[in-house]
Amino acid sequence: MTEFVFVKSSYSGGDAGQQCVEVARNIPTTIAVRDSKAPDGPILQVTASAWAAFAVHLGDDRG
Image (cartoon, rainbow, N blue to C red):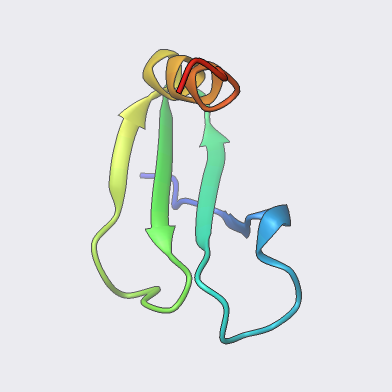
């Protein structure tokens, strides 16, 4: 099985104490998300289409 390659969110800044997530997009059908402060903790896995819908919703300014 291919391992996830996590990348820290560009919104997290350089401060190690900030709250941020890491996202892995190196597996075409799965997006993985984890807490950067707990790299050995749980990993949320969603389909690429679910992640795309979530990302669109984040940009939705309807509240």
